Length: 70
Image (spheres, rainbow, N blue to C red):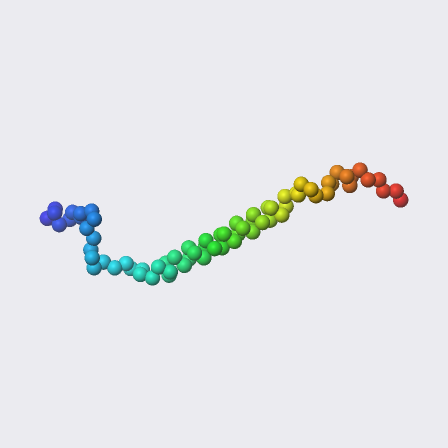
């Protein structure tokens, strides 16, 4: 009685089939999420890089020292 309840490691049922045999149907939501998440991260990085001031750009301190006579 006890020996019939013991499973041996490495022994599998040869006739067992996976319930979801179509891999694409299972992975489709994860792939779509990954693509959308990558797009959001890429857009964020691009906007951060655009807002970094360039080292050779115009200095804003020079504009404050100008005197305008009317």
